[in-house]
Every structure is written in C-alpha cells, then in structure tokens.
Amino acid sequence: MTPLTLDAVSMEFANPKESATQALSDISLSIPEGELVSILGPSGCGKTTLLNILAGFLRPTGGAVTLGGQPIRGPGPDRGMVFQQGALFEWMSVRKNVDFGPRMRAIGRSDRNRVTDRLLEQTGLQGFAEKPVYALSGGMQQRVALARCLAGDPQVVLMDEPLGALDALTREKMQGLVLKLWKETGKTVILITHSVEEALLLGERLIVMAPRPGRLYREYRLPFAEAGVDADLRAIKARPDFAAHRDEILSLIWGMEEEIMGRSGVAA
Image 1 (tube, rainbow, N blue to C red):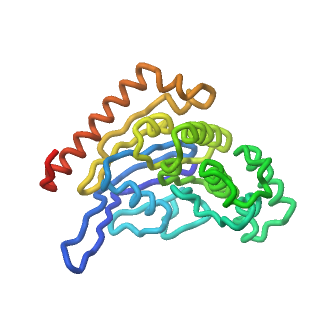
Image 2: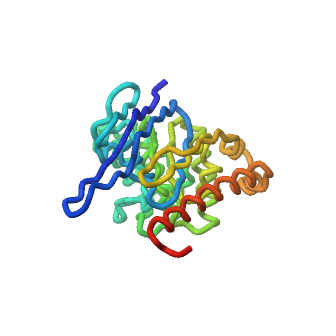
C-alpha cells in the first residue's frame, strides 16, 4: 500500500504590502492507495492550494507531505494532474496528446501504442484518435486530458474542478467515466469540486473544508461512488440518503459563506 500523507500542513503567502495570508492551517490527513476522495468547501477555503501542494507545485510553509513515506518536494511522475481546462496541445491529434508523456520518457513505440489504444478505448475515444484536439467538444477534450494523465501511470490522480466547465448532461456522463476509470485502474483519486452533488457522487470519502484559514472541518464515508460504478447516477441522486447528505452539507457550506460575508461587512 502507498498512502499519501499530510502531517500538520500549513501554507502562508507573504505579502510585502499587507500582513501575510494564512491559506491553510494544520492539515493532517492520510489517504490510502486506491481511495477516491472528494474535497469540498466555500470559496477561499484553500482547496486548490491544497491540491497544488499535493502536486508539488507549492511547498508548504509548515508540516510535511509524503507519498509512500517519501517526501514530496516537487512535481513527479507518481502524481498526475487533470485541470479544469484540459491544458492540451490543441494542434496535435488525440493520440499524440495521450502518448505525449510516454514519448518524452522514450518508451518504445509498440508499448506506447498498446497503452494508448487501451486508454482510448477506456475513455470512449477510439474513433477520434487522429482528430485534432481543437475539433473536439469540451467533454471530449476532458476525456483526452484524463487519458493523457493515466498514460503516465501515476499512483495518484489529482483533479482540480475537471468537470466544472461542462454542460449538465456532459458533466453527468463524465462523472460516470471518472467512477469507471477509478474502479478499473485502482488509482488513488483526489478531486476538488464546488458541486455538493458531485462531491457526494465522486467521493468514497468526502472532506469538507472551512476557510480563513483553510482547515479540515468534517469528513464523511459514503456509499454512493461504489454504487455508482454499476448504477444509473440519476437513481443514486434520487436515494433518500443521498438527499439527506446533500441537504446537510449544503447547510454547512451556506453557513460558512454567510459567515465569510459577515466578516467582510457585506449585507446578506
């Protein structure tokens, strides 16, 4: 097992003209291999900062982050990132985008083709391999981004609002794809989202963060991700226990947002 561990992680951003901003405070968390975790919270709670620390894009100002006992000091192939916008090479074909990482690592063509063909099939892109990325819809581009991330065979897949820009129907289809790929690959997946429903659907474990400074506030162990692998996601959303959790978490988030607005002197 290869756990991802945060031990008393804090993050402070210096500001030469004002007092420093404490973005995260004393976050301790252990995520076992293969777990699907969703992270939710109001704007400004440090969700993306936390993900960037896990990716190695930021070094925390306090505490430590390890993967399999090894400290994370920067980006590495053991962690893959999927952004809200795919960050793809739009002039390249789908195939060349997906196998870009293996090509950069000088993996042989036959092995690259085998991996790429499998991922194109898993993500429903097998009929689009030679299409330029710019010719695809937003949903299809996010499929390419997922496939490209997995082509690097990372231990951990980090997802920063990857479905946020999609229309409702495409987003639901992509949620199903995320669950399918999680189950088929056995990867550890950590997903940031602003959507309570999405966090419930895509989190075996759902973590709610509170802001100012960002910290872990509440944690839920949920059955919906496992159930959603083989079920209609709309049927999952219609379950009474899903609705109860949604209402409880919405109330938490709304309460935090109102507190933030009160602190800022903004009328509700």
